[in-house]
Structure formats: C-alpha cells, structure tokens
Length: 276
Length: 341
Image 1 (cartoon, rainbow over the protein chains, first blue to last red):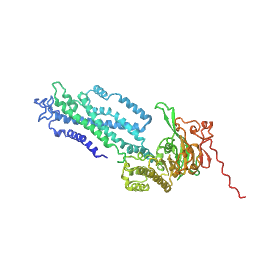
Image 2: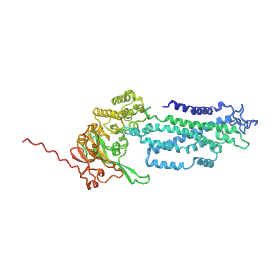
Image 3: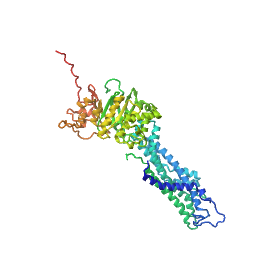
Image 4: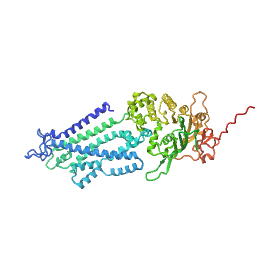
C-alpha cells in the first residue's frame, strides 16, 4: 500500500528510532563503564567531553555516555509500555462507546469530558507528591491510566463513522455476526488511527517522563533516565553544558522522529479509496 | 388491509413505520418525530419485482432497510416466508438473512476497501457454512462469471474496478448465499446510462434464472418500466398508489402519480403530454399535513375539506389497482359480455 514518497518519508525517522533503540538495547556492550559507577579516585568528576568520556562526566564522576545510553532504556521502556497501556485502554473504551452508541455512548463521552477537564500534568504532580518516590512500574501505570482519553475519542469517532458505512450494513445484511463485523470490517479501519496516535503519544510521553524525572517526581536517582541526567546538570556548582546537551539532544531526536514518523504513517496508511 | 395479488406471498409487509426522534436528548424523551416511513403495506411474491418509486426523501430506502431489519422499524409487521421477521431474536434472524439480501446504491461505499472482492463474496458462504476452502473458491469464481466478471478478479481490491463492475461485485455478494429475495436499493442510479442498461439486464437475467423476488427501489421511471411487475408509488412515507406496471403507466389515478408520470420525457417530438407542475416542495416528514399528505399540492378538481381532514386509505379501486385518494372512484366492473342476440 505504500508508495515511494511514503517510503522516503518513513525512512529517516524510522532509521533514527531504530538506531537509538539499538543503542539503548545494546548499551552494556557499547560502553564498558556501568551507568552508576562512581570512580574511587574522584579526579574525573565534572569533566568535559574527552576521548575517555566522550560525553564527559557528572559531578559524581559517572560517565555521561553510559548514563545517556542506559537512560534511553528506561525512558523508552516507560514510554512504550505506558503508551501500549493507554492505547489499548483508549481503543477498547472508544470502540465500546462508539459501537454500542445511544445513551451508553453519551454517558461514556461525558465521563471522558470530566476526565479531560483535569490537566494531566496536575494529576501526575499530585499523585507523585502524595505517594512520593514512585517505582518505575507505578510510573508506567500512572502515565498509561492518564493518557488514553484522546485515543478513546478518536477511536470512538472512527467506529461511529464506520458503523454507518454501507459495507458494514452489507456485512450485517449478509448475516455476519456482530463480533466478526467489528473485527473484520471495523478494526482494520481503526488500526491506522491507533498506530499514528500511539507513535505521537510515545513522543509526548518521553517528554512528559523527562519533565517529571527532571522535577524529581519520575524516575528516581541514582537510576539514569534522560530527565534525571538533565536534573543532574542543574545541581549547584556551575553549569555543565554536556549534562544538558546530550540527554537534551536524545529527547529532541526521539520526539521529532516520533512526530515525523506519525505524520508519515498517517499518509501511508490512509486507504486508497479511489482508483488510481 | 392486505395489498396482495393472490396466492401466499413470499413477503408481506403491514403498516410498517419508522419514526426518528428529533430534538430529544438522552435524559428527555423526544418531543417530535420524523416520520420517514409511516404505515407502508404491500406483498411480494416469489419471482416477482415490485418497484418502489418516489422522490428523494420519501422513505423508499428506509422502507427497504426496515424490512431487512438493518434499521429497526418503529411499528408494523414483516412476514417473510411464513416467519414474523420483527419477532425474531438476533441469531435466528442472522440465519434467515441468507434468504434475503440487499444491493446498495453506492458501489463505492458498499464494498470494504480493505478486503479483496473474493473475500467479500466468500464471507456469506463462510458465515452460513455453505462452502469452505477450495469449494468456496470455486463458488466465488462461478459467481463472478455469473455477474459478468472474470474468476481471476477475486484477488483484486474494490478500488481496481469501475462503478459498474463494483455494482456487479455487490450483486455477486448478494447472490453468494442463494437468496430468494433481494432489496435492490437504487442499484443503477449511481451508474452511467450505458452501464445502467447492462446492470438492469443482468438483474433481469438473474431473476429469470434463479426465480428471485426483487423489491426494486428507484426514482428513474424508465428503469422501473423495464424491470417491474408491479409499481408502488411513495409520497412522504406512505404508499399512495400501487398497481401492475401497465395499469400504472397507462392509467395513473392518484394525482401525485399523474404528476410524477407527466414529468417523464417522451422520446417522440410533438407527443409530450400536458406536464403537471406541482407547486412547492414536499412537506417535512417531521410535520406532515393533516388528512391526505398530498393535499397541499394536489390539483385534483374535486379537492375538498375531506382531503385536509381524513387520511385516505389505500383501497383497491379496480382489480389490483390500489389508490389512496378520496376522489378516485371505484371503477364499475366491466359489464358481462353480451349474449348473442
């Protein structure tokens, strides 16, 4: 289904994401220094980038390259898992409301409006403040449970539109069971929406998690995530640009690549309805 | 009231209605209804074509869909092959669907763009367990050839076909389950005129070969005169005249039908009959006129207070010719042939 322009637009963001993920997965083999290793001599603390430490070291003398790569594992894993959770939740909720329709749909959507009226960041800050240091599992849960509203609305809209399409009526007239209509005639048309929104949500969640961790409410030190490394660069004792720039570039790269990928996928996955 | 033409009908529709609520919210019952279909009755026999004609918005499509319960009717009864369709639960209804099918107007929207046409046609075979595997492939190939396509088209997607070809696919899909009855919902009005003729002829051939009954919904009277055995004329959700094709075209009796027929162009110079031009637009089905729904636009010379007060029933004014009008008299039966002197 993809044309050549589609493939070209997909290539760059996909390549950069694959490269970054590979670096994250292969971190222990790429860098020899563990991310939390504090050298005993202490002389190499807060060193600018050098051959031995290409991204420099932080105030405790830990290797920033190692921390950025290992931090990528944490940041990407949290984002991917919480988006998987929020997308499934949103898809199920939206599909249910849209397919049943009527009053059930109205009630579901009003509840969603209520949920949407509370800013996500506020919820996250309050929960993190109340419970203090959250383990990463809870962080995934929290991000997942607060991130599904938009997906639900989009899927609900898609399903409601699809429900009225004549090929759905035709399947019903043929005698196809409702469950099969939903799986075979409706879900395949919702799939592109899910893929695109999930891709964009990964970008959003990466930034959100970095923000929370930067504030000390997300991933907890000494564990490395892009947000905690950024925070380390803001500790008293003078600006160390390498602590800001390298995790910052990583965040920007992933967010841009995800957004570009999402847009390219939206183009590539829209069905060709009209004969070419 | 029974509007039949003898013998046990395959389909018997009585007082079918579909009202859509307007201005209602989810916590409040609606205060107003759109009467899309408001008391439609007719019968259809095996192998017969009943055309349902009328202008846009008169409730033809809703009637067709309500009969198949693709839309749940508000009231009325539909008996198909001896069974009360509206009383059936979901599963028995689903099973019965293999005997009644529909061909849609829009050949673009009625095929799933993500399924090959082979898969679309197979679906009916699979869900009714009529054929599987290689046998299903063979049946699909046979169906494609029966509707004038080629067997190897099965692996192609809808967007690879023209409008006329897609309509043939839609017909093949309907035929796959070997139905007795098909609702043809304006099956040719989205097609070019030259393609229309091909599809109409295909439908006629299939009817002859398979003994199908059609409810043929249309607004093109030329197509109707080619297809129909009987014709029902709808206006604002009701049938206002129902007659055998020849009788209806030769001697329309309801003033609305007369106006409708006078609008058909006659392909003979100088032969055009007097054109009856109706004033205004059809009234809103949310607020239909009292009495005869046609009375505000009616040009019948005898129009009187009764027309605005009493709803005329669809009554048999001469054998097989049903008219809903206070001022169409029952034709006196022909006198018996004179005995030779």
